[in-house]
Image (cartoon, rainbow, N blue to C red; front, side, top):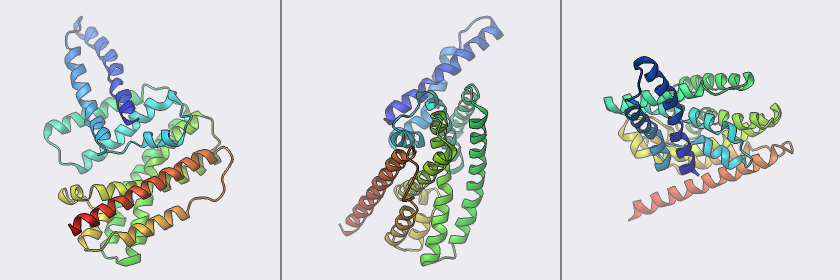
Length: 290
């Protein structure tokens, strides 16, 4: 599925080119640079699609499609564009990029923003998108507060703060469930129920990502609870079991009839992530023994 979604995103370059060809003709009376522009934009689009395909960046839209089996095609591009925008901004903050790489990232962010604003969006959905970016502001600020608190914590006190850190970051899943559910005319209470479980899934999903990225995060001095546990020379198992227990304990026992199938799928996705984390830890223990 990721290959299909990456191709859909890369094909959005054509929408930019259609406008840019008209602009070039308006300015110069002819179109002779559009091929170079097309190549440049296609290359910039691959700054993120290559990472999706390699599993270096997680595609929230993909998880939403896995959970929502009747995912509406009309909002798929919009979701991918927003997904790419967030991934790109995250890399600009965390990654060490060359001048050329940074230029491609900026081109791609601007390209994605231009596409987002081309799509007709209802006022309620526009408000959700605006609220989502406010959530990201909250996440960015609170993340640093939690990381600072974790420095002086040990044992379960550390686990509690680290869990809040992941729970805060899990808000970045909200919009990617809200967009298709809004399009499908789900009620607010139904969307809220699904989003709540989506955050539980994302909490486990993010923890898995940080385990996989441990060496990379240490190399580039990116602080995470997993990095801190490594630096404190503490085992991961107890913390991970704490997160599993607390997160899965928050899954509601009952839900509305319409939300129930999607919640069921999200819980199954969460359990799948849990199993993959257990496998990661087993491989790590085996490599240490050999």
